[in-house]
Image (cartoon, rainbow, N blue to C red; front, side):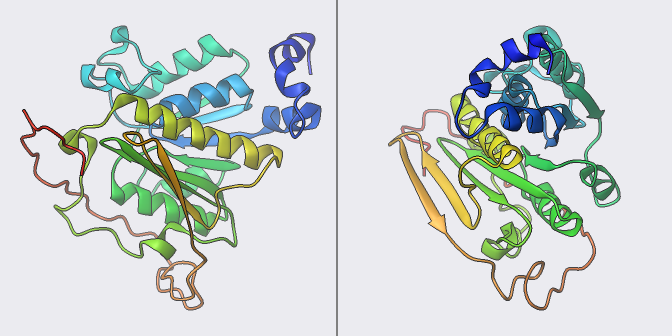
Length: 274
């Protein structure tokens, strides 16, 4: 560790549970962030600040003006540029020592395994169920740990998986029917919710990489910003899970079609929160 790194990470170096050994682990680690949007923004910034050696960014989207209400890694001047390029700029502005590997396309059933197998931990920062199940399935097949997050309106949820613990399908075996899935573009979302959920995901990644604390495995953490209540639901690996159960029926990757529910007119609604 160079003198500059010792100064940069000094608050980690004196922190019980991290220390020099933990910081060196972070410097040697590789984390893949799928989605450089609302959740991926705080994840990327905090992992870069923490000194994670290599960050992979997977996103095929361009920055738009409507992103900037919550996707804080991007700037107004980045509009119409690829999100992975904008995010890379912000990461290097914050910590030039971090290596960024860019995947300027949407991961699919043909590409995701080739990508995730090169990383120690995966962050799901996506906004639709189809890719969430694909990330879950690919990580289990590749034996990779990951943290999944989701936000809508004023609420958020996240869970962490490491090999041997419950997966997303243990709780939700199949995605909702096409046309029934809600997205932020349909329901709206409080921008700061992305920061809450994303920083929690970044914390899970740091804990996994350093061995500090207890992870959100076999658990689903939910929070409601209107009441500022957090709840933790405990669940176990389900013997009948189609992916990680005793007799799995899912043995190859299958990408689901995604179709969001029709956009609702909420103009003038007194309380859009369900």
